[in-house]
Amino acid sequence: MDLYHPAPYLRSVQLLRDEVPSFDRYPFYLRSIRELATLPLHPKVTYIVGENGMGKSTLLEALAVAWGFNAEGGGLNYSFSTFASHSELHRYLRLVRGLRKPRDGFFFRAESYYNLASNIEELDRDPTGGRKIIESYGGKSLHEQSHGESFFSAFMNRLRGYGFYVMDEPEAALSPFRQLSMLARIHELVLHNSQFIISTHSPILMAYPDSIIYQLTEDGIQTVTLEETDHYMITREFLNNKQRMLNELFREEE
Image (cartoon, rainbow, N blue to C red):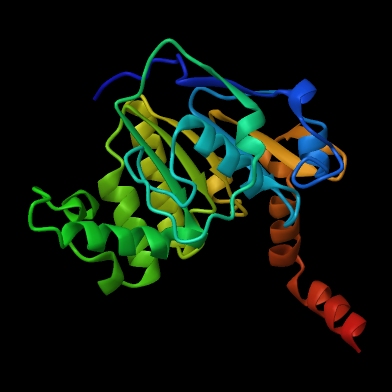
């Protein structure tokens, strides 16, 4: 097994604040974006977490597009577009790259994964296209598997190591057991010189030990431990005091 070299492919992300046209319009009025200056990235795994509406996916999407990925996901050579809904944030980001260049790269986006799967099938129907793209995803149509199986197949087969991987809520269709398996796969790829930027709500996926967690809040961006995230604390409280929390929730409804 190759030993991991700690030099990152992407060292940090900077917002070109002087070039932002207005902090009163989307997405710049989001507190996490408004307060952004320079965000250092971990050479192995960086997590972007927070409540819905804090700008996690917006920031991750902009980072991915600025790197050269398609806004709807895929590798660097994907150029399909079903609906251009991404923000202009990527135009105002400076990516501080490392000295090394990755051999592989992939932007996984749960909400547009169906569009990616459809594009793969469309490209594979071209008789002059050579080797089928689906072979890199396990060889079975992504539409002929359950949502979770399709997601997991991409993680296990498409990501090859020595890569820069951006993932937006990859746990969306995965059971807790599959999330643990994905965590093990992340570790395997990290050992093969890979760097991950992950937006997630899953305390399981946040648990990679050699990482940094940025939590986006109404007060901006904070560095936290796993145990300090809302996701971990609420999940732990529910598992430890299920009946009390249910009683409180139902009493509020009544």
